[in-house]
Length: 372
Ligand SMILES: NC(=O)c1ccc[n+]([C@@H]2O[C@H](COP(=O)([O-])OP(=O)(O)OC[C@H]3O[C@@H](n4cnc5c(N)ncnc54)[C@H](O)[C@@H]3O)[C@@H](O)[C@H]2O)c1
Image (tube, rainbow, N blue to C red; front, side, top):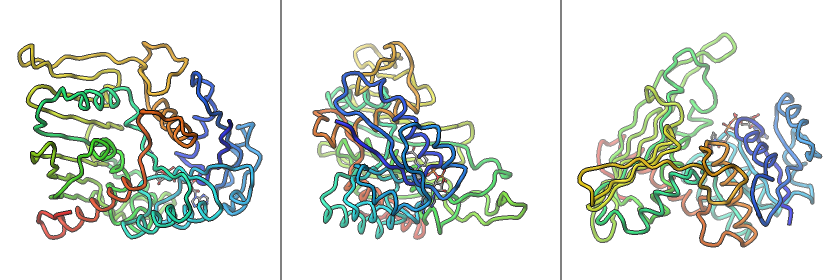
């Protein structure tokens, strides 16, 4: 079976997706082939870039032309957030399946309208979030599901980078509310931080949010200045209920985190165990050994992937590997072959993330705890 894919938005993430399909053969005994057949972007130079992908038959600036093709089964849409709703709904109306990018609409109202359109269409739709496919994230999930934590005491998850620390960096659509959304960094990085807690059933009951803005102006890249009005850092202190106990869950999303490049982390501590994973140290996971005094043990992970690949088991994994695994999960689930493996973020999870971001905006504005 071959999954024929179209990409709308061939920028940073559109090209990362193309690279996944380009090395699809690395997947071992995988039931679905993947082929990129059509690409849409407004920028000529990006369409030229896709000429290096031999399976691409259409390169266009009009996404309706891509959607009119009968040989496109599923579409990946990676465009600025203010365009999500219109283009996702066009994809569904054209009868195509969809891997949507986060945050799944510019705000909660848009996310809900997209979710309604998904339901009405009956199409297979998932939302992009790669980091839970890192070997350390998968190992942490298995550890928690085994009950090794005992009673859960606290959970922390975050995604940190330092892209906005440099004031000379030019502004782009991610720094402006009109195109990124009022939720700012939460829309940018938040789906990544909540995917694992949500999947474990840990949904915030209450949130107290601390939001921070960065530089209010940046170069516009054309000799002028541009206003930047989005939140850069968001620290959310939440209550979740786990096995009848209220547990603190701290979610950090930061674009101004000194020293960080693209650090996704997840930590959970319990009365009997603990687990820590950070992509900044992607080959290692730390497990707390209750039986052995107060000791954290470092375990090297190698290439322990959800879907086996030809890569040697001792080789460390990185972002392109997580992304390939996420795409494999999308293709497998769509084909009914996911089994009990971890799946891509679901529409309900994307909408729930927006409910949290909206509550966080309110919490920050009113300096109070908001109940979800
Ligand atoms: N999953 C991840 O790890 C991850 C990482 C970065 C960004 N993202 C998400 O991916 C999406 C895109 O982000 P990006 O970093 O790739 O942005 P980008 O700016 O690099 O690329 C967006 C592309 O969309 C194109 N575009 C704009 N309007 C269009 C239209 N009407 N038709 C076709 N193409 C159009 C632009 O020309 C641009 O090339 C966003 O939703 C973002 O949040 C996800």
